[in-house]
Length: 397
Image (cartoon, rainbow, N blue to C red):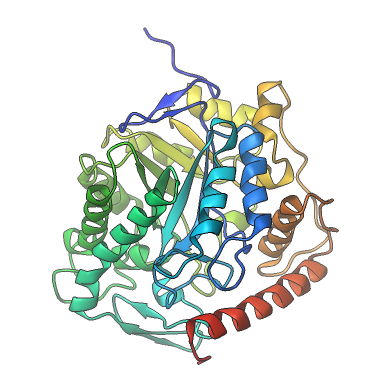
């Protein structure tokens, strides 16, 4: 019997790219864009630090092809008017030390903030905390080509791959969910129809880039909402994508719809999606990654040596220690996670966002005061929102 690889064994993806180990810095909304859709020097330094710290790859979340539908004004926008020099610098510095740098292709859909964009979704939504118009069939048919153009631009600027974002309640995830997709045409109703857009986007992106350029996918195991996208449906979607030309499937879960609990704020210990990944093995031959909840070397190593996944997606642990991969290689069990006296909705996300900023500026982590983190992030977001509206001519709703 062939021994299973460990965390520091190389991983060769279907397109031939050889990752030097199994540790991937998973996508986070780092909020380090300049508010006009372009990378900043601090952002380039951030990804360079993760690369120098030993990760095999990093994923930048999120990068938009259309500025009308951002997740936040700290996102990057990769279109014809982008600062190509800044993007090339980010690609080069984030690829140091043999790392591969990928951009996460985003579209917030109905979760687009109304003060910086125009929320849209598969179906209209009219709730006190969330409103969006339904996309027309013509608009839907144009989306695969739009994702493909953004992927082609990423390759031309020196990035090593893209990750199609179909998780966390953003647009492609909304199409998969019967709770938010109530269309009566070929893009709604049955699961085969609800997954149609994702399959079309995947095919368009794969055909638009070189064979050796990575095309990965982030997919929810479920969105955790009653009446929403469920695990048995996720298994069918993954099976349908088995021969799509994807190089890696990143398994996540949860949604950012108002009122829904975030997976990253859960209190349960241990990795979140490893058990589901074991079920995924039965329906696909594609390499698998699970993102969420990995805190120690032992947890990450176990996920690999048991064969549950081929790579582990690490986010917050790499914020606490940008050189975590090197530390784990030397036998360090992992960083000490902060303990907060109290938290508020969004408080942990705010603290880690400010901690990311501290890493990018090479200074000490922020204090453990959640109120301070929330206030600092609010001020940064307000400034970025103003810059976004001025740059892209979007009126506040």
